[in-house]
Length: 612
Image 1: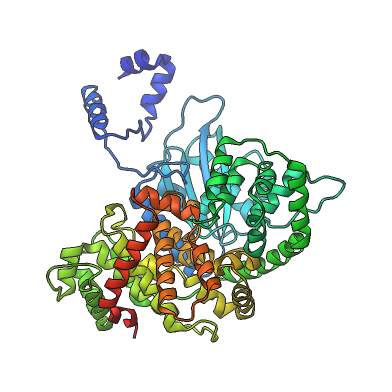
Image 2: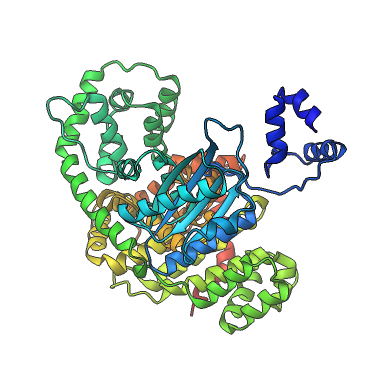
């Protein structure tokens, strides 16, 4: 081994000696099984024993992590949120000091590090140089105490001359998911030689602001003003912009960053007359003929629509809603049966019998599942008569997702909707969306275990929360939508600064739902924002759209305005995603889907009243 290290890495005898005295826990990582086997055999020939561990590499995390540990961290987060207490996450990395070559590994020192903190704090050692601490510290003074403890611990158990970097984030102010908090903590990271105040200043600067900057002494450039205008355009204001002549619109749009141009483009209705024109312009970035006139026209619209004033009102409303959302006790409580089913699903020791027995304890839930499984949406040749048969035929994940979704939906079926929305109509729409999504995914195995049925059922959960907690504001939203050719989602963003999807995201994070469900619920109206789950979110958005189109067809009093509102729901953003999923996706595909689903719904009408 010493000869190998000297030859392959050109290390000095001193460095080789240090490595052999303080071997790292992780020698390296490979992403192919055959490469791993080669490495293992090579080390074996050098008389080096090694173990192989599977880790997750997620672009949202700055490190690879053992999936079992990620599940453990998720459970701790869930407990913290349910306990309704503010907690801080500390993200710590260590490096050798100037005099040293390497550091002893943090792995294997979990217990020693834990003993330095309170019993109520949780320590997670991630790899050789990284660990995470969940502790009850929320203000600057208490965070300073934790900082000092971390540094003392590292100097005591790792090395005296050591470089420690620490970042922190507060739950729920900075986020309610592990990924959100790690992102904030990463931005806040400071050296142990810096003050916690430096990290606090960084944390304060990354809070999102929706205020429209005032143009004082020409401090706001034309480009900045136009960028804000196009980024914040929602509802009627967005419609005013898209009603401009295409060359005028492009004249103003061409002066903002390309990424913002694309975001504006993605929000266009899929059948907009601007789609092909703007697609070509954005791709070629051709110079418009008369930019000056275009800027004047758009600025006139900004003044006419009182954008600055409306954005201030939007900010106030958004802060009201977010303040209430951050009070954990204001979120719907997860039904006990849903929690039990989810716990079983997360437990690697549970088996088919455990899951079936838990569902059978709720006879009404058992009946609902069997009715859905035996419906034409599943197209099974043989009748399923037991939960065990359903699990064997459809798979554990499929049945768990169905049980989970149906039991969760009880949390909003009994909600007080103040007469603003018919509870039965909302349930039927949610069930339709879930069934349509499941039908569309019948030949898409990548979505099999992602909870497509549950996502469909819960996609409008945010509306229920807004009505229960902000009925006056939501009355304004519904009234504005009825008076104009603007979808409810767009009006929500115009008045509240967010739509019901974002509210659903917060509820899902509080319930500690899987990321796939959270992103599908959060971004079914804007799938590209869902990152790796964008196609999954697009399926839910398209299913929502199909359900609303079917409702229009059933309603004999439907007018052109109502039709236009529903059409606005299905955007270019959705169209791009759906074309990735279905190579033959076009207008005819949509019409065929409508016909197929309508036929199946006729045969499954009893499912839409299954909540009773």
